[in-house]
Amino acid sequence: MSIPNPDVTSTATSGRTFTAGAIIMLAAGVVLALIGFGPLVGGIATAAVASQRADDGFLRSPSTTLSTGGYALTSPDFHVDTDMGEVPGQLVKLQAEATAVTGSSGIFVGVGPREKVAAYLSGVAHSVVVDVRYSPKDVHYRNVAGDQVPSAPEDQTFWAVSDAGQTSADIETTIRQGDWVLVVMNRDASQNVNVEARVGANSELFIPVAVVLMLLGATMIAGGVILIAFGARLLGKSHGLGSSAEIESPAAPSPFPARLEGNLAKNSSRALWLVKWILLVPHLVILFFLWFALIVTTVIAWFAILFTGRYPRSLFDFNVGVIRWSWRVAFYGYSVLGTDEYPPFTLAPTAYPAGFDVLYPKRLSRGLVLVKSWLLALPHLVIISILTGGASWTVWNRGESSSASAPALLGVLVLVAAIILLFTGRYRTSLFDLIMGINRWNYRVLAYVLLMTDEYPPFRLDQGPFELTTETEPRTDGTFGPTATDGHSAA
Image (tube, rainbow, N blue to C red; front, side, top):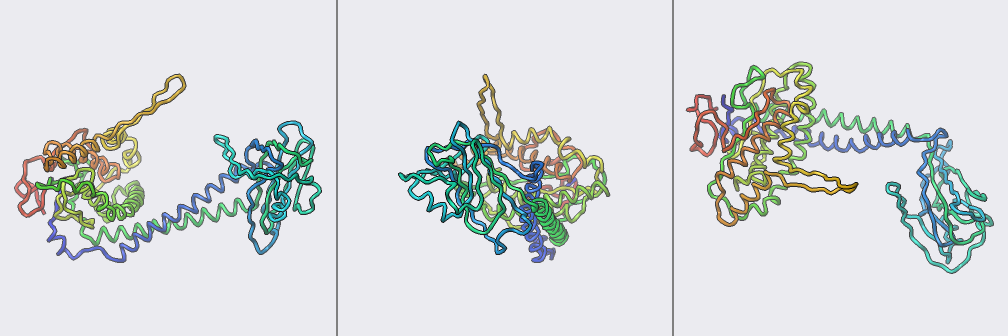
């Protein structure tokens, strides 16, 4: 069975091209969905944080040891900007607690206006706590030098809220407009402040904010998914991507329903591969959007197969087009370096020396869709990860670990081919055949994981430019693939 590969003339005269509306719809959908992840994750995180609150409603940080050889510990100033002054209904409250680590004459905790605190501690040695990390515990200070001795903090009248005790002190206050600083001192204003401190916050806004953020994010993602689905459907229907024949049963005859081909260029530049990563940037940007859309359309197809046993044809053709585009870029780039001909910006089959297609299945198993992408494909995914992604491992010895890694076989082979090309101007055919075999295995598994076929990928490297059951030659018109003489149709 042959997978047709129409030449560029038939593609150009088919009259089916990208529509501006479909492209805009697809791009807008991807952007909208990506933006929607922000508020959705923020809402989930806010809800998770709110679930950690204590019985009194406060969310408290772990206790942390804070110390300074100066006279005071202060927070960076925090700015509250609201035209309402104090938040109505005391919706937001802050709490701070400090307990003496060693015996002292008492502990003082207070919150005061930034200007007043700055004037009080002017010329006084103290430390500003600029960063607190809890795992692992680490505190960063900004030490301020001075030679003045402050008066007792309890004698000051500018504190918005304060507390003092023999061994500990704690405050609770609502958020009010202004610039504020939290101060911890010894009660007698002596040096060497050493406390266990923690802060907390309580707000009736936690849950409403979480719900609003999650609804906003989910709405944006849903809108993006709808736009992506319609855009992909229009592109799949309007661009002449549905050139693949249909197969009636999941068990298709050889060759495998996913077909990958590549024709090695006879005369490649020795050094162009050194800059191809720059030349491919436009493709990689577009493919980022296309692959995001492909993930969305595959999820939609999963549900369609589960309930109907059919892969929506327009989405199937779109997804094949995305993989076809990716393969051309990979063939030109660092998965093969098989040609110096720049890849076209299209999802459709062309006369480019690298092509990919998948036979469209009329019916797919509803049950297999539940397990084939992750469970059944697992052995292949392990092999593919080694062939194309390298391997890493960790060795433990007496409680200490050491890590090692090995490069991907495909990357090593392409690098060897590139170096040989650089110095000899030739691409070794045997090396190219092996590289094609690895890529062919990879793309077969990809088609299976993306639900495009129920036929299980074979565990073998089918090397060479073509994957055929009978011997064929490249076409004389510049295209490649099976000809009409192989016993199959060659549209």
